[in-house]
Amino acid sequence: MFGFGYGPGIWPWIDFPDIVANAMVSYKFDNGFGVTISGTWMAATPSFWNYTAWIPAQDYANIQVFYSSKRWEASLYFWNFFNSHYWIPYAAAAGASPDSGSNSDWVVSGQAFWIQGTVAYKF
Picture 1 (tube, rainbow, N blue to C red):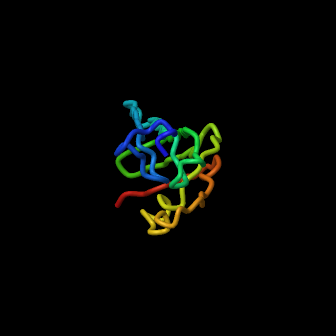
Picture 2 (cartoon, rainbow, N blue to C red; picture 1 turned 120 degrees about the vertical axis):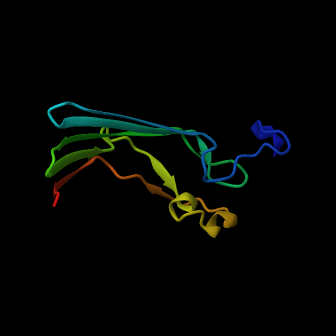
């Protein structure tokens, strides 16, 4: 098992990336309009206990444009803006499912590009 590049005691947990980085930047102009850009990057993740199947490193980005005033808010969200293909391990998607203990190779695909809008009136 040590031929996979990991020494004793330095084994990544299956279906959970050991490095996840995310960032968000938001700016609102004086006229009430604004933009938010966020992104997430995940390191490669093993999906079998014997480390023979891996989910490659992956990323996705989201963009929101919005308007806000004293009484109104409107937002337009662009989720997975670049339509990145990414995978969510079943164990992580199910909230640390005990299924990871059975050497699960289940993964679900991440959501493709989609748009969501909201409008709100403040009382």
